[in-house]
Image (cartoon, rainbow, N blue to C red; front, side, top):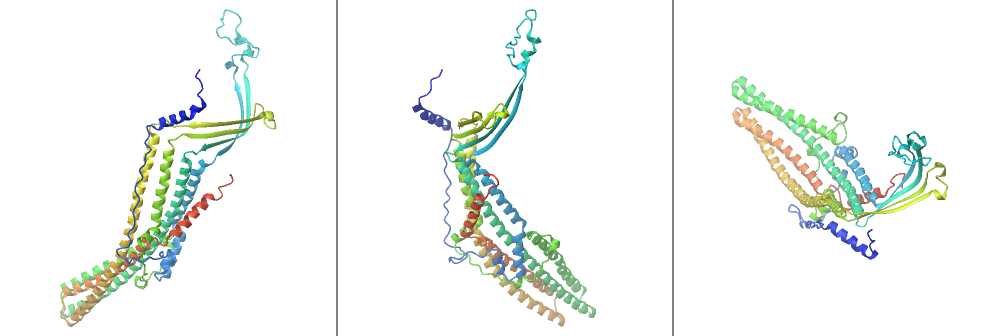
Length: 518
């Protein structure tokens, strides 16, 4: 028999076993460097601190369109992407509770009512005390096969009414790390909803601008068709009196047909953009009516970007990437803690009896049990090491994505500022070109009425005027879409205050009533 170990040597043995179990494990972790100080200023803007940009409905008001403001409000209420994002918040809140459940003991009511019949053929001793001896010779004494008492079956009852409890002592913080990782992901889901909201508002505004631009281009196209038709009528009149040729009429007929051919694609764009806008508003195309108007009637808002450091604090996508990284750090710590021993306490208290009538209200039927279990992984085919390495790799990935999100936020702002400035210059230059092309067309028409026109020059003049008008409308659309891009780049009204509100909501959801059971 093996002698018992002295009490003083047991901690040393436990430490030796732990050291042996971890001898083949690599628990080192060099966290990636996250230091990335933002620049002091934007290249395309003056370095002045600015309050957060207006968000959602308030930003839409700046364009001076009541219809646009109403569309944004309806999208914030009925957009299905937003509804899905809200559903993901509920999922994340529930997952936070699931992942935190190991922090608490589990208590179950275990009731058992069992009756077991043991065949007599499996019991060696019969009720008469005579055992069944299979080695007895068939020619010897009387065989027990004829004795029914030797094969009497037994019936055993067992009844239990008890509570069982189990709790894992979180020495190494494994369960706490899992809880923190999941709770931070609940914050992520709220930041993601804010990202979806900003994207939805921007998509509604861009789609509305496209509707207005399509209407503007259609008006321009119809006006150009009318101009081409007037020229066509004048050339036909000169053809009748012999001062024009068939070549002149054919050339003008080509220009007229080409201009008419620009209308169907514009009609298609207008109708399809309306349908896209209907989806953003959570409606069917048949149930929505958009009046529209002209993009020239909208007011272009003045937007100051502020400082790069301010922008980074106002971007929910940057906050989302940062929170994912923070959550992953706890996942790495959880995977590391899995290498260490797990100690679980279990207990039972209740009543047990072989007869239902003696189950309760008898002190001698009380049963209890307390047990402790220590589990130390020794060899698992490097599963734990693989899990730990995977979590570290995931952290490195999210760290790179976090740094990229910072760079993207700064780049988005710079690009939007560049787009606003350059599209404004383009609009001014095209406005000059349209004015000059109109004067050239008027002069060509005067020469045509005087009978000294050149059909090639007239055709080029018409084409130049038609194209520059359309280009100006497209440039105006790009200018307004640049404002929307800057709205997104600056966080769409999000701010550190919004962040704290979202975190408070997440904590409140975690602490809220969890249901009918404690």
